[in-house]
Image (cartoon, rainbow, N blue to C red; front, side, top):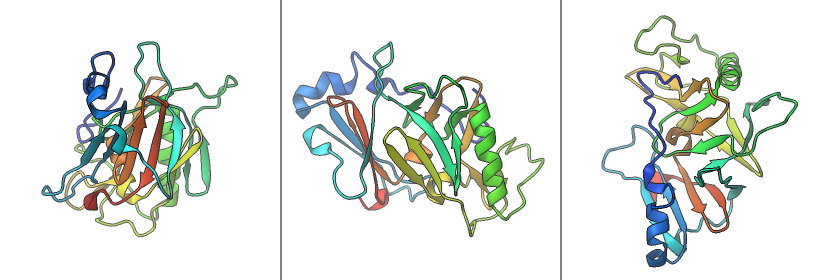
Length: 230
């Protein structure tokens, strides 16, 4: 895994791993094995907190909700989903071009990892397509930024819409979720790369979505909201 100095990575949160996770150990108190989260965007006012809820009251319902199956891996970790591909504007980029098709559970949803981490081939194609669609010159030769795609600006007028195409659920990612200000006057694409075949869906992309995990039905649901007002 290649995580830049600005986009630090972590390992999956043990809080929600079986068997002794908070969800499993306290489901009798909460009424069910469900929880939801609403993460505020990066660089939100520090007085505004992200929110979590547990149990029967944490269902994600209403207009705009999309859901995708959770995939249980061999170690019973339930927070894997299947990413079919990513669209940058009108350009669709498949997760891979293997004749075997897309592997189920190829990406892990992790609120403890800031950037979304993609396999090298997919990462390169997404970054190149974003570069082609943004009418600004990328920053070159900045040691602090490394190889990230960054621009010396505080706002990008025309940011291509990214869509994460999960199995059965298309999740739209606006500039709030895709471009992050690691330092004053700079915006960087909130992605990084890994040499492994799978990836991690990080918390930059999860911000301003009410995300509900239903471990009984084995689905995760996404609803676009303003998490600073929840």
